[in-house]
Image (cartoon, rainbow, N blue to C red; front, top):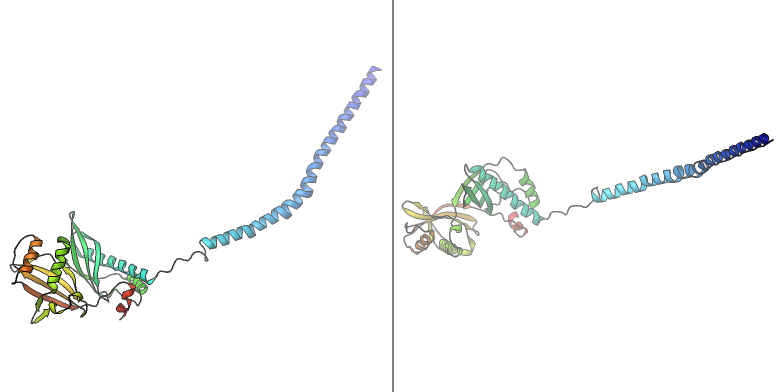
Length: 302
């Protein structure tokens, strides 16, 4: 009797466990099928999330961001550089001419090198340039005055833009370079200006001719350079180069006097006080100046 009751209870337990396991197993299988297959998988990834988000991002966000940002920052519709004005081109021309002139000077010098070029005058065609530059040799620096004569025109064009673009293409220039010493850095500004006025007030022999600077308005005579003193023919001499801005001529000459003192300041003062000085013009050349700047453009075009 007890054995049969025990057997019955054991069978009931086994049946209950079987039913419970089937229920649990069935429940586990039904949950993923409902959420994944029906709603999430079919609708969200393929129709809405996948296609719409992917397409919209690729089509709108990707294209708009890529095209608009790219175009605005670096593309065809990006920021346009400001146009260079004629005033700016004039400055660029002057810088380029200084570069060309400095190269010519350095090529002409077997020893030392030149820096700090300062263009004084340049003719309209660009054949001739007058300039100053510092000459460096063995740690010593002296300022020199240079005459550079090129073998061809370097100023070509009707605008500063054209001139600059032509200057960039110039190569294989041949130039004759002549240098002279400079008096101006050696003495005071006051004494230098006084000596320049003295030069402008004299009459000079030029072969059989007489060129009287005193008859010319001194304001139209421009001193381009005065050399330091040098000795020639037993006399102390100062050379000069003067531009007559009205007649458009450059005069090169010298003033010779007694040897006198060794100090350059005293030499000049003594020279201006002598009545036995010799005044000579050694060369006269035509010179039509090229002026930089828009205010000078009409003059250059004439």
